[in-house]
Image (cartoon, rainbow, N blue to C red):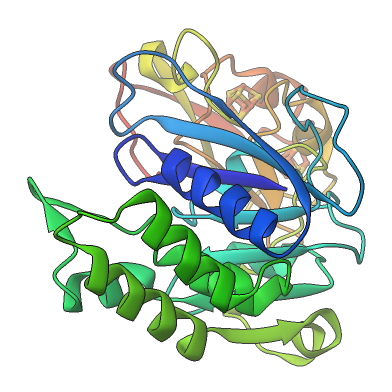
Length: 286
Ligand code: SF4
Ligand code: SF4
């Protein structure tokens, strides 16, 4: 499975507790975090394997189908909409199902406001809410991959002297009890706001090693709705997959990632996209 978090949220510790708990359940495990020095606030990925037989692989899991995300904005940044194809699960730290998750097709999606529960139990240190361990309650409920009893045993084993020991136990229980689970069939029946129900390209834009591309653009595209014939040429030619379609078939430009190359303007046969001068980092309409 894959754990997505931000540095400081406790995602790596979570993976360690999970492996201990799964071992108490009689499984074989390993946890491999992937992060560098001083990653506070930056995305952190951790792979955890849980098997009934000895684990021989010790590498990152590139395409995990069971995903726990402590920050719900991270899944769309790492995985395309067709990632799950009816398999696996997503466990989210979210009070409700975020709109963009209606584009995914996991067999199950579990969600609960872990942040709120952890705060309520006083799991706050130096201004950060410690949600890593409570999140295990949500994961146990959504996936059933680890038992609650073993989770509590692992917490006692790893943090016997922690001032947060009882709070972690209580928050794990509450997260387990409060997690809402929806199946893929149920999600298909549910409504999400139509304005957010867009048809996206297979790949979604994301920041590269040099940062977000819009941070250095000097022009940005603007759609002239009255001119657009919905031919989709701009959608297929955008090199960064920054253009999706809304429910009416009109292009929606992701100004947060658009790099301002203006290819969309050049290919539009009816001048339906115009170039607006802008300053680097201007996220207008983002
Ligand atoms: S300006 Fe370039 S990156 Fe931005 S939407 Fe148009 S084609 Fe895509
Ligand atoms: S290329 Fe022009 S006409 Fe075609 S969808 Fe894009 S904006 Fe509309």
